[in-house]
Amino acid sequence: MTTDRSKDLNPLKGKQVDLDASLTVAVVGAAGKMGTRVSNNLNLTDATIHYCESSPAGRERVEALGRTVSSIDDVAGEADVVILAVPDVVLGTVSESVVPQMKPGSVLLTLDPAAAYAGLLATREDVFQACAHPAHPSVFLERTTPEEWADTFGGIAAPQEVVAAFEGEDQDAKGRLEQVIRAIYAPVIDVHWVTVKQLAQLEPTLVETTGCMIGQFLKDSMDHAIHEKGIPEDAVKAIFYGHIFISLTNALRGSNPFSDACLLAMDYGREAIIKDDWKRIWDDSELDSVIATMLKLDRAEER
Image (cartoon, rainbow, N blue to C red; front, side, top):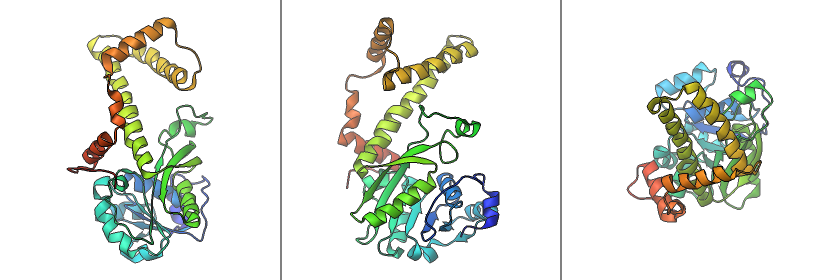
C-alpha cells in the first residue's frame, strides 16, 4: 500500500502519475531493476499497490524505500493487474504459481514478449494475458529540461511511447490495463496495440537483433579508430557523435539528403559489412531461434 513516507523517499517525488484509486495492482519482483522502476511510478498513484518480493535481500530493498512487502499468495486474488517483473527465464515457473490464484477478469502483465510468444506462461480462461514494453524516449524527442536529458531510459521525466499486446476482447479490462501501463511507464505519449507475435518481432528482431547490435557496432568501430588507429579520442567523438545524429535524421526522417560521395561510401560499407541475406532475421524460424536462445530453451515457437 502506498504511504506518505514512501512517497517522500521516492526519487520520482513530485511527478504526477494518474491511476484510478479503485484499482489494485501487485508487482511480483518489486526489488529487481524493472520491478523497482515500475514500483516507483505506481507508488505515486492513489491505487492500492502490493509490492511482492520473495528473497530476503529483495524484501530489505523494498522496505528501505518505506514500502510494505506483501506475499503474492495473499494478494493475487484481489489484484486487477498482476505485473510479473521477473527475469524471462523464470516467468513460466512464476506464472504457474500466480495465475491459479488470480481473480476472474484480472490481467497478468509481463514486460517482455518472449515468454508469452513461446507459450511459457500459465493460462486460465478467465484471466487475461498482456505484455507492455517501453519504447524509451525517442532520439528525436524534443527535450527541454536537464531532467529529460538525463532520463535516457524513460519512466522518470522524458516522455516515451509504449507498445503493448492484450489477449482478449474485454474492453473494460483492456482499459484498466492501459491505465496501469501509462502509470508504470509515465510520462507516456501513447500506447500502441499489436499482437504478441508482432511485439516479439519488434523486440527482439527490430530492436535488439538490429538496433542494439548496430549501436554496439558503432561503439566497436569508434574504439578501433581510437585504440587501433591512434586517432585522438576527442576528435573521434566530436565527428562521430555529430554524424551519428545527422545520419539518423537523414535516413529516418529525410531531414537532409546524403551527398553523392556519401552514398557511394555507404554502398561500399553495406557490401563490406552486411550480408546479402540479412532479411532472414525476419523469418519465423529465426525469431523462434533467437527467442529460444534468450530464454535458454532447446526450442521455442509461437504458441
